[in-house]
Image (cartoon, rainbow, N blue to C red):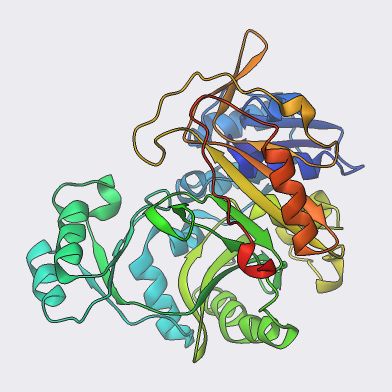
Length: 420
C-alpha cells in the first residue's frame, strides 16, 4: 500500500515509525513531516490543515490509506474531503471531531449518555462568567471551549486567578477563537490517566492506558504545556477498572454518537481523572494523544496499518489489538523558554548515540544542510521499553543524556511515581 501520515510532530513520527513496520506498506509519505520522518518516509510540503490540497495530492499519488494526526485537520474536515474522493482516511469526520472542537458540545453529549464527568457551566459572556466565578469556591477550572493546543485550561487556586483566566480567554483572546466561549467546571481530584481507543463506528477497542505530564517543571510545577513526557501502562489501572472505563465511558459515547447519526471512526481519546467515585472524563480528543502515542505504539504488537483499515471498514475486532509485555517511558526534550518564548535553529547533536531500539520521535525539528536543528518548542520525545517500568525509565534517561542542543530542558521525574 501507499500510505500517507498527516502532520509534522512527534506523534506523527511515531505513527510513521509504526506503519513502516507493516509488511503491507510499500511507500510511506508524511505531510508536512519533519527531520525525523524524512529518515523513514518521503516528506510532502503541504500543510496539515490544507485539507483539499492534501486530498488532491493523495488522489493523484494513489494513496491507499491516510492516517491523520492533528486535531485541527480533523476538525477542518480532512476525512470528509478524502471520503468525497473515494479515499480511505483513518480518523473521525468533522461532525464527530466536534467532540474535541467544542467542549460544551462534548459535555452535552456526555450528559445525554450518562457519562461521568465534572459539573460544568458554559458562558458566552465574560460578565456572566465573572459573576459565576465569584459564587464558586476555589479551586476553579476555566476552559476555553475550542481547541487551544492543550493550553486552554486553567486550574485556578483563587477566584482572582479564575477571573484572570476568563479575561485571558474571552477578552485578551490568548487562545484566539477557541476562547470565545468558556466552561467553568468543578475541580476533580485524583490521578489522571489517558485511554486511547480505536473505534470503527460501532465498537471501541481501548489501547493500553498511559499517563502524561502537562506541567513544564518537575513536581508538576510551572505552566501547562503540550506534554513533557508520558509512560504506559500505569500500575494503578487494574483490569477491572479498565473494563469499567469501557462500559461507563467509551461504549456509551460511541453508542450515543451513533444514535445521533454520527458514525465515529478513528481514535477516541479519553482524558480521565480517577476520583474516589470512579473514573470521570476531563476531556475527549478526536485523535491520537501526544505524547501518549509515543509510549503506546512501541508496546503495540499488532500491525497498525491493518488496525486502521479495519476501523475504517467497520470490521475491527478486539482480538486484533495485541500488546507486548513490559513498559515504555517517554521524555520530551524542549527548547529553552518553552512554553513561553524560545529560540529555534539550534543544532541537535547526539542522536546517533542512542541505543538502536530507543527511538527519538521528532517534533520541532527540520533539516538544514544535512543537520538537524530545532524548529519548535517541543523538539523530541525519546522513548524506551523495558520489562519493568524501572528498567524503561532508567534506559530512557540514560539515552536522553546523550542528546543535546542549546537551551535543552526536560523533566526528570517522568514515571517516578511508578517506581519510587
